Length: 103
Image 1 (cartoon, rainbow, N blue to C red):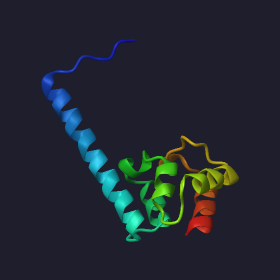
Image 2: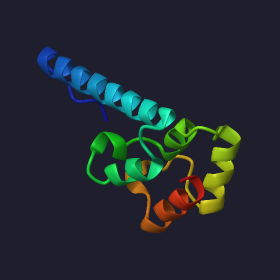
Image 3: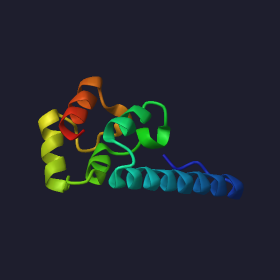
Image 4: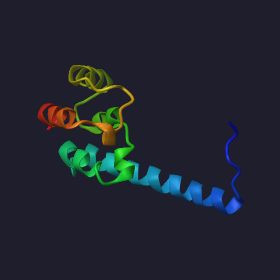
């Protein structure tokens, strides 16, 4: 199925919206990296903020100080979180276990 055609104005608006989402995601990850926000706060925010909700859990976890790719993969496997899962798609049990293990 072909992509719907967009007018130049629609394309410009979509590009601006995408850039805004990327900027917001970058700021969120930087706050998590610097310790200004905790993972529990981010996961709570994922319920109401679509930008946070669409962020991959693995990306959020890699932003936590002390967690690298290997630890993130092990932690996600241990809890039963798919590698492509997004923060908004986590179940209550998965969120609780992440917060208990990461803080």
